[in-house]
Amino acid sequence: MAQSYKDLVVWQKAIDLTVAVYQLTKQFSKEELFGLVSQMRRASVSIASNIAEGEGRKSKKEFAHFLGISLGSKAELETQLILCERVGLASNSEISFLKCSLDEVGKMLAKLKERQNSKSKES
Image (cartoon, rainbow, N blue to C red; front, side, top):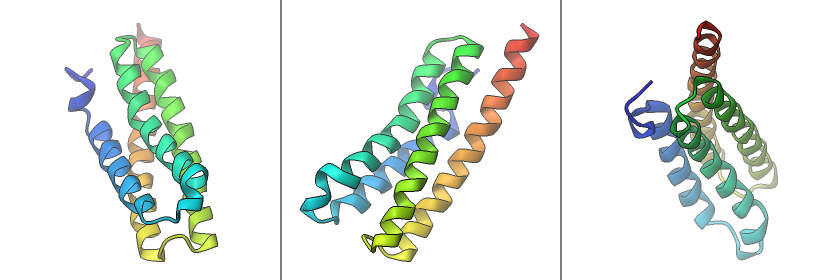
């Protein structure tokens, strides 16, 4: 395991993704403040937060569990980005950038979860 969750590249990229989501949603109308803005921000924060919480538990099995929760939040954010695109809340290029970042984080999470699951079976 890393010395700290902050050393994990996937956590760092999840933080960058969250910052990008906050920047994007700043431009949304006030009527979306308690709708998609709130949900997108919570989902993006949840990705990095669950990586940190899982790593902080210092158990491979629990870490894998929390990585699974992060993957669920990733799917939630992806759904919300699709909705933003369909209702025209953001440009296609803004959404494409976030989808690419989200895909990268998702792949990293899946690999890390797979590794943690195999390590917990070895123990």
